[in-house]
Image 1 (cartoon, rainbow, N blue to C red):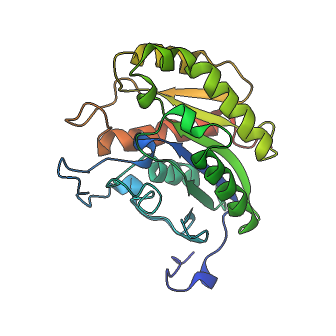
Image 2: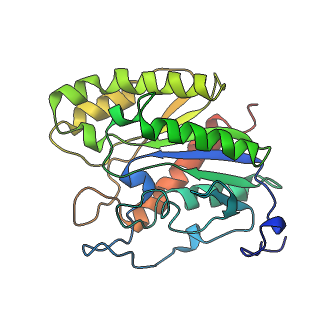
Length: 251
């Protein structure tokens, strides 16, 4: 298959499998972003563009996917490498003939309460996800979720995390009319004083078609908050393995 020409949208084949990328900065991607808030432009082999990987832009059209995936979504901070491209490349490598579509929705610094039904971020995610299907005819296969660092600062927020996350899962499934939508969440690699309480909540969610990938131990940048580029590549592979093991071919 020849690589699509970005200047000719009619040449782009629509994705058959759609994945929502949501949460906060470690999903949006800060890999390779320097302390001066500039991305170094380094794209690892595992994150290179592929003719069978597309992204849904902020202008609501499908285009060839390339790093940084969230550049036009998480616009208040510099975006770099996240887990999305290495995830997609790993899925494409195992799913012959399939075309993967990524719907970036993550925004850095956001708390779980900002992803409640009725809030701007949640409603935008649902609307983008629905439109991504309308513009492709493909099906949403999973939601990849990495969030919680902003809820690790106070005991109150950490204590409420599991209930809020379970409500989020219920709401997004209902609003997308996908009652069994697979959710692959990431347990925190970093966070503030109550990080372990948030991790306990994430690892303790026991709902159908919800699995958790643990990022603990992945390398962090100098800020002790964001994953390095190398760690993001590894996380993408972990997410892909979770999807392929638990959900691929389960329609």
